[in-house]
Image (cartoon, rainbow, N blue to C red; front, side, top):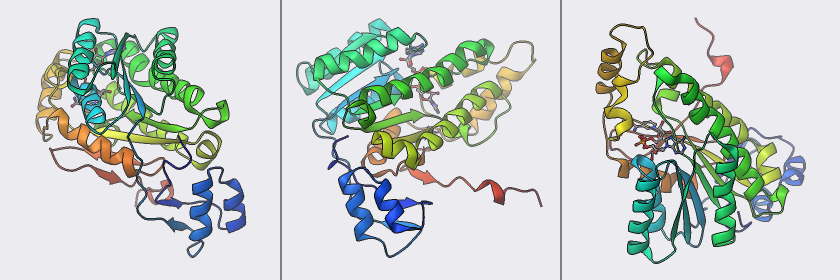
Length: 314
Ligand SMILES: NC(=O)c1ccc[n+]([C@@H]2O[C@H](COP(=O)([O-])OP(=O)(O)OC[C@H]3O[C@@H](n4cnc5c(N)ncnc54)[C@H](O)[C@@H]3O)[C@@H](O)[C@H]2O)c1
């Protein structure tokens, strides 16, 4: 990320010693914001700081269909310069970039067939961003499945590949690796914030993403890499992942498919565009480590995860 592209609105829970905090800030604007805002020791507020999407290059895994496709469309609408669509579905991926290039201009989008569970294929997508657009600014680790019947694959896609995509994001965008910094968005779910008995493994994978991202989204990593980590938690959104979900529950548990269908039916649905519009807001002004929910076709909102010490059962 270019040093001037983004300054955090507020920085919480850091050292209360201002000189300590100033010396830790590596981005010039970040440091400037500290100097301007030493009034409050724990919460430093800086207004009107919005990340500019113009000219940026983004990579989306699972970007050929569903919510990932809507993320690509919305980013292009908001002026990004280049988009890598990395998806295992070749037909839908090629159709997606063809449509994008007709609408937003030639070579705006490039497809690469990618199985995110294969490190060399995932890395090839990052290399393609650099060779095609000379840089990379935004990574969205979006590919995910709801399939507890094949939970090893589900964990490989929803967890392992998100870790791999995050590490590659740091390698290809991190200031510690000679780059400009950037943004990594990892996709969780409202099921990362609640239980649902119909799909316990899927629920576990999405809790994983939230813990991973909140921890990467902390001052140590930001100061080293210049990368903001953001978490998106979509609610029930109209894609095949939801409409087919009851076919993919754990084997050997009678009625679990029906149970899941009913559990999902109780949650308010929305179109993919609502999540994508929320993504833009989150990217523009979400704080490093923040977690956001987009559900019920309503505007996106940020959630506050309670401190562990407040959780003791009364
Ligand atoms: N749809 C929802 O209601 C909902 C709710 C919360 C979270 N999510 C999350 O949002 C993300 C996108 O979900 P969606 O509903 O758009 O799903 P989807 O099934 O509509 O699309 C997923 C895309 O990922 C691709 N994909 C699957 N496996 C892959 C692999 N191994 N490598 C590369 N690409 C692969 C598919 O080809 C597809 O294009 C997922 O992480 C999902 O868990 C979805």
